[in-house]
Amino acid sequence: MDQVQGIADEYKVAISNRQILGMMLPISFAILVPQLNFITNNIFLGHLNEEALATAGITGVYYLIFAVIGNGLNNGLQVLIARRSGEGRIEDIARLFSQSIRISIACAAIGILATYFIAPAILKHSIHSPAIRDQAVAFLRIRIWGLPVLYVYQMRNALLVGTNQSRFLIYGAIAEASVNVLLDYGLIFGHFGLPKMGFNGAAISSICAESSGLFVIFAVISAKGISKKLQLFRHFEFDARNTSLIIKQSSPLVFQFAISIVTWEFFYILIEHHGQQALAISNTMRNIFGIFGSFIWAFAATTSTMVSNVIGQGKKDKVLELINRIVKLSFGLTVIYAILLNLIPRVFLEIYGQDNDFVTQAVPVVRVISIAMLMMSFATIWLNAVTGTGNSSVNLAIEIFTIVFYIIYVYLVLEYYHLSIIYGWMSEWLYWLCTFFPAYFYIKSGWWQKKVI
Image (cartoon, rainbow, N blue to C red; front, side, top):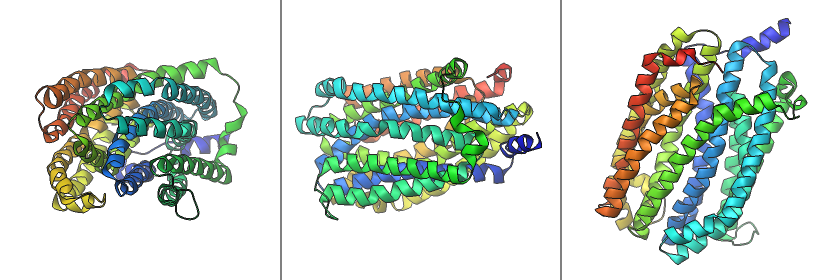
């Protein structure tokens, strides 16, 4: 009994800057690595030609649609595990984890089928350039086979973050990054005795990288005794109650993320109508947003987990204090790298190997997204605080509210008035402001305090 209580206490969080940063930093590293992998792909592809870099924008966002479905499952599971950790109900953690694996594999199968039989028709009617369209379809039919691995990897991450053991994420992230860089260089350009596959080589290297990261993280948590401590592999039989709970908690988040990224794909399709350079510039913006935004998303993941854990401990009165601490840390860090980004934007843009005109056209867009990241640094904290309360249906409602304004704006600016992509990227300002206000007022209202999960 004492041993069980000791494990339960180990999984509870404290409200302090040290605890916040201790959880956030490993999460940021785990989020940053996939972004670096994506950027590495794009740097190598940029040295192939501008068409490859432009196509990577379409394929990257498409795959991200399915990746964030797994992220929705991840977030829902993470909140549930964090709540059980705060409550000291350790025996329920393994049951939740095993059912999440079953659900994620089923979702991956649907994603693979959709990519083979539905995506080509959608891309045919939405992308003007036949060369970009054909290249995107061929790439995605390879890349999508990494989806089952990615989903299981995300469920494993949810387990570690939800039980306050995010430090172990680093091992898988290092393995993933190392394999991706080596295979990208080898398979895209034909080095190390590997076949020269060009654009499709990036797809294979990404799958191999994700697989290596998953293998390493499984090995680490087994060696650390976490699997044995939580008895992870004793509950893989179907569990209707926990399966239902995960779906109920995660499905609004899945729809929230999917709607958001589908809208972003819509944004990229409208950008493609402005020409190949506009699409290539926007793809680099996604890269820059991704690498710097990783730290903000890590604070966001920390928020949902810690809020849920604190509520599980019965300390609802401490939730606002916790949120305010995280907001200050997130905004402060974002100010630093927003200044850096504005001081030396050309340094970040020139690594893609494009000409001076490309860099000149891209610099004003960098200024726009740096402001967007400042807004994101506090808006996403309040939104993820809503996630942590267990009211994921409220997250979905906020997303729908925001997306309506976002879609109207980007359509009018990019398609109807055909304005510069500088104004198109200002849509991020609208998005984060529309996200912040309802999330802030919901948490301040205290309506979430009656929610039980």
